[in-house]
Image (cartoon, rainbow, N blue to C red; front, side, top):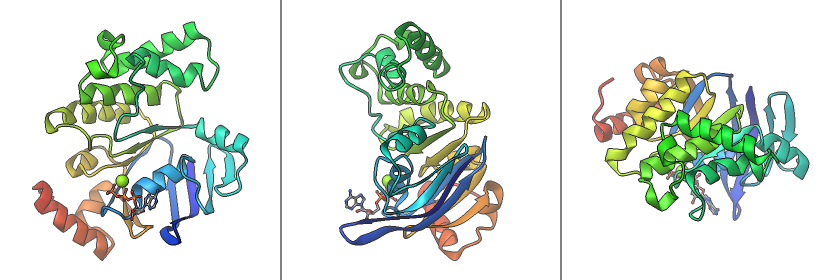
Amino acid sequence: MLEIQGLKKSFQGLEILKGVDLTIEKGDVDVILGESGSGKTTLLRCIDFLEKADEGKISIDGITADFHTASQKKQVEIRRKMSFVFQNYGLFANKTALENVMLGLTAVRGVAKAEAKERAEEAIKKVGLLDRADHYPSQLSGGQQQRIGIARAIVTDPDIILMDEPTASLDPGLVGEVLHTIGELAAGGTTMLIVTHEIPFAQSIATNMLFMNQGVIIEKTPTKEFFEHPRREETRQFLMKSISDYSFVI
Ligand SMILES: Nc1ncnc2c1ncn2[C@@H]1O[C@H](COP(=O)(O)OP(=O)(O)OP(=O)(O)O)[C@@H](O)[C@H]1O
Ligand SMILES: [Mg+2]
């Protein structure tokens, strides 16, 4: 469904992504773990062309492109197949929840307003916030803002949703509702690539676990096996540390 090959990216001469290969099958929820600074955010941003990679290929739903040389048109074509959920929600403060969700349809895809409104309401209903559709972001809790961020991601019916630490900006009490919403998407068959530090959540939702180490995905393993018998020593070390941080039991 989504295939990335040989993705490289440097910042100021320092190579951050050193040749990432990754494949996600339709309907899978793959979760990326890795040390801070290992390149997880950079990877997702390169996949979505928010950052221009130096080398590598992407293939999604039959469309193939070279990250570095893809035309603007090709980039738009590929980006339309994906949605991004940001750590900091990324909602427009001067637009209501409904308007925020409609925007990707009206402004980017030229969908007529009446149809966009109907689809946006449907998406907002899915995240359980229809009664808040007229609220501005400042009138919503962090958890609610992120659920609107998720509604905005699903409204375009993408092939895959990329999420970068979707709960990292939330107060601990608000994490649960967002994880619940993501869990419902997963149960509904939405294909997702998620970066998170929420290990118990990853265990409950992920099809496969990916471990990123110093700019490379060094393992991709079915979730149960990943936590019971990680293939790489680096992964084992990371999990050992995380176990004490998260006090979870394998
Ligand atoms: N725009 C940029 N300019 C220069 N260096 C950058 C830029 N973006 C990221 N980096 C560097 O790339 C490396 C990887 O950053 P990245 O944000 O991808 O890590 P991460 O795995 O997402 O970490 P975290 O778990 O803390 O979010 C870091 O060393 C970071 O300083
Ligand atoms: Mg990051």
